[in-house]
Length: 249
Ligand SMILES: [Zn+2]
Image (cartoon, rainbow, N blue to C red; front, side, top):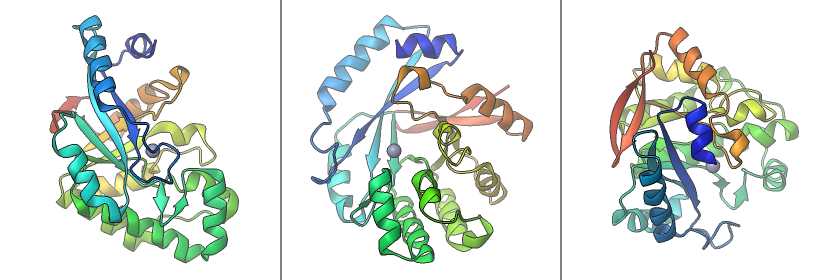
C-alpha cells in the first residue's frame, strides 16, 4: 500500500526508516527487528523492481551516553541511509506531549531550548549518521507550552549545528510532518534551510515522516517545487550510505 502510494505520487524511491530506540525507558525499546525488516524490504524490492527503489534506512534516537551502543549496532548492518534524531533531551521525551510539558516545567525557556540545541550538536558531532532528522521538532509540542523562538534568538547555537553538519558532510532533512503539526512549518523551518545553504551546505533530503499510508509523501511534491523556486537543483539520496545527487528539474 505504501509503495503504491509512493508510485502514484510520482516518487522514484522511498526509504523506510524504522525507529531504533536503545533506551530501555523508550516505548520503542526492543521492538526493532533488523532481520525481519531486511527480509520484508528485499521482498518489496523484487515486487517493485523497475518501478520504485526501496531503500533500507533507520532512524536512530540519539543519546550521547549511547554513542558506543549505536556505533556497535550499525557497524555490521547494510543500511542505505542512517538518520539521527533527537527525541530525548536528558530523560525528557520531547517527541511527545507529556514529556515536552514536563521538560518545559523543569527548565526555564532559554535553558530548555539551549539544551535541545546542545544534544542536536552532539548528534552531529558524533559523526555516526548520514543525516540529521527533523531538526526543530521540539516546536511540535513546545510551542503550546512556551513562547516559540526565532532563528535570530538562537542564531549562535543553530549556526554551530549547521556548520558542524557541513564539516561532517551530513545532510539536513527537510521533514514535512511539521506542516501537518502545530508549527505549520517544515522541521526545520525554511529560514534555517536557507541559512544552511548560505553557510555552504549542499546536502538536503526530504522526508514526510509518515507513520500512516495517507501521509506517504505528504506535501513532498510542493516542497520540491519550493526548493526549485529557491534555485536548488538537487537533493541528496543515499545508497549504501554513499550520497548521490537527485536532480529536481
Ligand atoms: Zn523521529
